[in-house]
Length: 434
Ligand SMILES: NC(=O)c1ccc[n+]([C@@H]2O[C@H](COP(=O)([O-])OP(=O)(O)OC[C@H]3O[C@@H](n4cnc5c(N)ncnc54)[C@H](O)[C@@H]3O)[C@@H](O)[C@H]2O)c1
Image 1 (cartoon, helix red, strand yellow):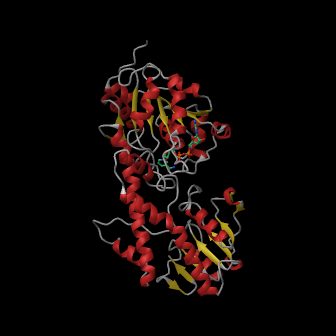
Image 2 (cartoon, helix red, strand yellow; image 1 turned 180 degrees about the horizontal axis):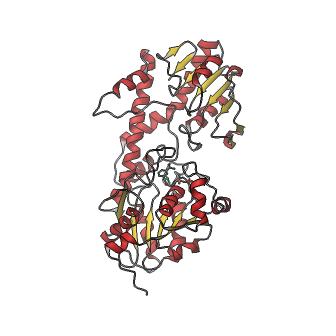
Image 3 (spheres, rainbow, N blue to C red; image 1 turned 90 degrees about the vertical axis):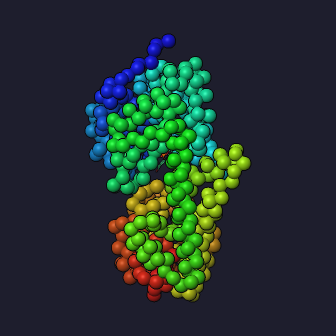
């Protein structure tokens, strides 16, 4: 057996790495870009030939990574993509950025990660560093990845290194990007942590080491559960405020003036994206193994999942009172359908849920979203923004670049679920706010 290369700290800090990033999605592509820009040679491994071909032409399908930034990296050989797992043989480190969805029964589905790790295990060699970046429950790296990798006959800590380092990318965030968001690293052994930390410190500004992969896995879940619970709190408050005739946005705005002890969360039509609606249930599931029930997660999930239904009833009331119409037969324009502003991702978007509910109630639903030209799930395409042609405009995602005053002026009725119109009060003329 070839002895794994033992490096001094200074060697680790100065040498460049050859990397394989498995999964060329919202996480994998920005990660590959950051490492390629830091001077590493990076190959992205993905199962989708179209994605791979486009990347090799220097074309990015991820909004946060413009093609203008990607193309030079591809041009000078620092970044490439392939569908062939053989590429990982030449890499020093393999970073896994694959989806970790929930099953239909809302239980963790690690099948994509497991399949990929089987492929990695076939090609594992002494000296390899493997890091899981996908969000998952505490124990995944040790209980799921490690046994598959050790089936190769190689031993962790001596022959190869294994660590967990959660991705914290916030798509669309121009301030906090992969490079300047601190990276949490927890390895199976101390040597694993050190090696992973050495890798990341060459490309990201701050690396924070923790004592185990489990601590790193739970850190990521804590961050997302924190958001889910606080969003649920303010969503519940929004419903109470509606009964009390208080503008919840005014209250949130005012509370946010407190310079300490308060963090602002805004109400909305529900949770979206591939993290916050899903990740808390990874912990919820794992906790059951310990006979423990995670009440906050359950309650937050319940409140947040109810929001599209609540918003449908708000649209119904607005139509009744504002236009003497029912949902059935009304023409409704949904403005903004991505799961958050200024991105094109519609995964788990509450807009899709709300549109489905409105349709089921008999409304004729169209949408306008310059970021999402087509919504195949509902067989719709974005229509021109002509508020005057509809009984009601429902602002679900407040993308920038929209003239919301103009929308209010031209529309007969507006339901604003994001306070995009900025009117004071819950019912202001033809504007109904969440
Ligand atoms: N998107 C985010 O904002 C975000 C933020 C932090 C963490 N995460 C986590 O990161 C992980 C990846 O998420 P994402 O948003 O990048 O997913 P994604 O769906 O955007 O990308 C995943 C990529 O993996 C590819 N793929 C699927 N099976 C494969 C296989 N067997 N081999 C190789 N490639 C395969 C897909 O074709 C796709 O291109 C998830 O665990 C997610 O929860 C996501």
